[in-house]
Length: 147
Image (cartoon, rainbow, N blue to C red; front, side, top):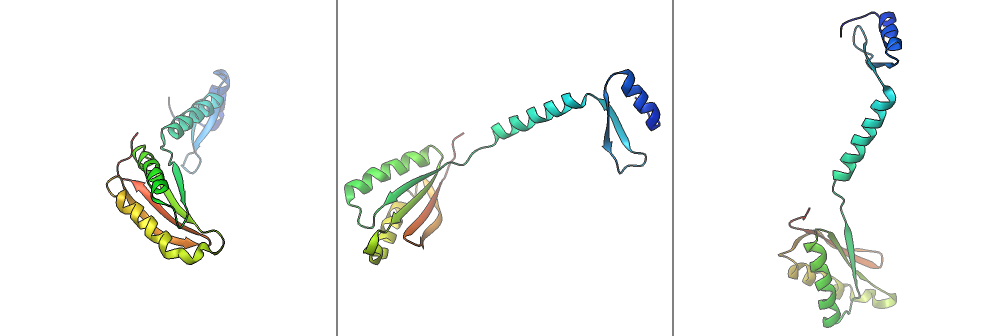
């Protein structure tokens, strides 16, 4: 390993049947390396794939309510919400207003706030209930994420 003129570097690369790869073109003189470029690309792709696999993926689970959801249905859906939060998934709870049921906006908001209060020990509210068209949406993130 040493400093060679570009013609000598090409000659060395040809002798070893490898590629001459420019590492830093802006340096004076330009920095080049003799290597197997296909192998380098393969290893880089492999590293990127491993990094991508390690990255945590955020899972968002949805629970849908009506503005006048009765107690049994509410409890059933709340148990599902607890399971989702324990598994480390984010929760998107929403109330869907059909037809004229939009007049019960306050009931929908009360329902979502009640859910947030009851799930307080498992997750924290990321976004308070917000009306978007015919949906009132609220996001809850888990307090401890499992890996």
